[in-house]
Length: 233
Ligand code: ADP
Ligand code: MG
Image (cartoon, rainbow, N blue to C red; front, top):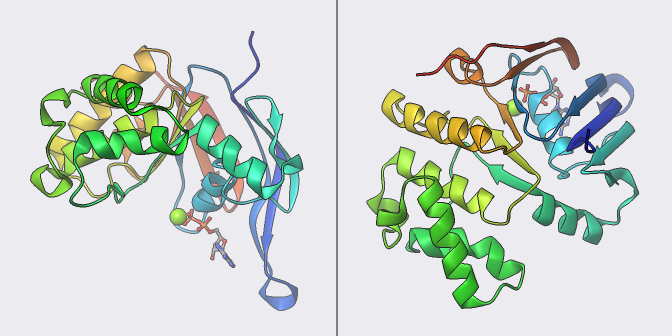
């Protein structure tokens, strides 16, 4: 088997010192193979955001090891970390985080512009990514001309356009109504079927039910990690 996309061993994260110490992660080990689709669930305060930030190379653990696509993240400088993040991870956030008064296609092109891809090639790849999420016909629309579900699909296209090793989503349907949630989940299903590697943090059973694998965090530790039969809408 090829090397895993994620390989974390005994991750611990401690915030604060002395009396205010919080053990946010208490030794999390997790391997995510290429093509997996995992949902991470847990109640508020269970450590989801802490884990997400470490998996996304936005924060470092207090101890433990973390390989992202075979790269030991703990050994990288801040600059190298930023590069690894941009190259290897596509982020999807609850709040979409699109740039206002900027067309969908220009939003999707942005990570390619940072990566130094030439304008013509940028446009071609951004249109292709918009096509994948079913929004090629909305390329010229600005965020305020799109529904919430459409905005989130543009954000998914933006996450995809750099061909990252991992799509990492934090409550991606948290701001969406049920119709838009269904549309976004369909996009994740399609991406998973196309072989993408997806890790999604969610509170919602209807969202986690679509993943191939369900991981539950309680008080900073993984208590269950099971394969599940996929339920399709
Ligand atoms: P979740 O996302 O599952 O709600 P978090 O990862 O945000 O959980 O938080 C896990 C624990 O760590 C909580 O007890 C929280 O109060 C604590 N925590 C999170 N961030 C910080 C921080 N920057 N400083 C101190 N404690 C924190
Ligand atoms: Mg959180």
